[in-house]
Length: 295
Length: 305
Image (cartoon, rainbow over all chains, first blue to last red; front, side):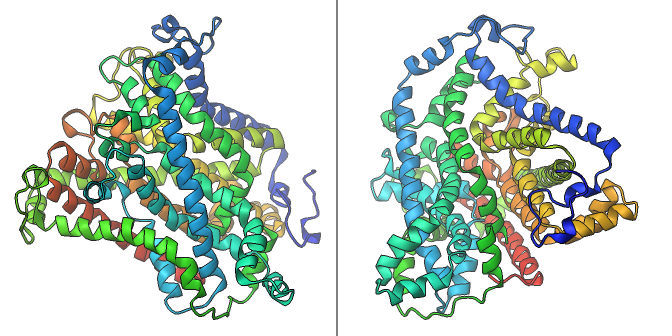
């Protein structure tokens, strides 16, 4: 990995190939230092969140907060899980996000296959519509969706959260999956037909497993937006608090007059960790998937 | 990656599947029609009606108001104030996000593996943080009594959410923090795809980092930069969670309202559903204009949709 990598002899630039050759050595130490420093600054809020969640109450409410704790405690987590139906909210959130992820992945897979592997009338129009649909300000639709949910009797149920999120995550998922479906060689499909596979068989037994990594990457976005939602939860789950979700519980702790910061940070940690795990697992595919989606 | 590069060269599919594509599309289209298109239509409809608490729960008949709601909205100085704040705030966020993202992408190409990994991981962490927990954490960091930031900066018990601009600044910092990673990662991937000879030539000609970026990388990465900029415009114009959580629903005396929160408050806090819908329609129109510009830029770049 020296600076004089013969970039010219390569047909495909590998990670960092060539880009490193325009670096001048004296500036490098400064650049390294800056990168580490910036990484620390960027990571600091998350560090502080986890740290404060483990600090005993007295240290959280100290006038002179220190970036460490000598007596970590689980009190804040205990408060969070005991004070309310937090476990239940966690499960509700997981159920809603899980359903949305699975359903939107399946629907988006079918739709992306249609637009990526077939030519038909209105295809371009549909694609543009999928793009436009991503621009719709979701929050503004809370008003008509509220009336819709009321009319179909879904208010106060988890369906009132699942259905809108399914709809809002679909356009982006289709748009992004298209690249992954396109990347599967067409020859494979022809071969499958020659071997006597039906269209359905090809779709589920050959194409689906091949696109699965892309599907997982796409799911991150539907997962995050659903997991993060508090607006629909706040507006559609009015009286049935047993159907509430995590963000609502977090907001209860985040009472602006006298917030229980330890509790808020513990609840925030509990909410952030599943997403972090999901993210770390798929981030490689995510990056390549974004490359496909934005091109 | 390799497969996609191949796909871009290959001709588009030419199969005519008869009804098959429509069969595949049907489930998604049904969901979108019912839960996206229909609500958008309803949003437009409600904005032309008189729709308040009396109609929602009192069973009073709705009446057609024509453009009266829009007239009321456009005649309200608060609306113009909020619109201006939204545009300026979104512009600042986009500028901040894209600048930080691009600068760090360039930095990533100039450092060794370990610092690069650290910065990547930190950025992934910020990216993965849900907007709502990001908001609570940033408010806590800047808390006048127990937050570390005021201690470090020696600001005493200065309240960041009290003043209009300092509250917007706080939200701005959080938005940039959670949205620069996407720009950074995508731009970094773009820079890595630039042939090494180009950068070598620039270095031989004595170009520094800034000059290389301005004259070589930025023009080559134009398509990528357009996409991330437009995406940021769309996201930052619609920002809701951060403002709602960090400034407690729009700040002291509504000083930190942006259009999205304004529409929500009008509808659900003061039950003026038609005014809220009218604001939603205005947002929709503005974002539609942005989308059209986006499509035009995509076309000009010769992208095949």
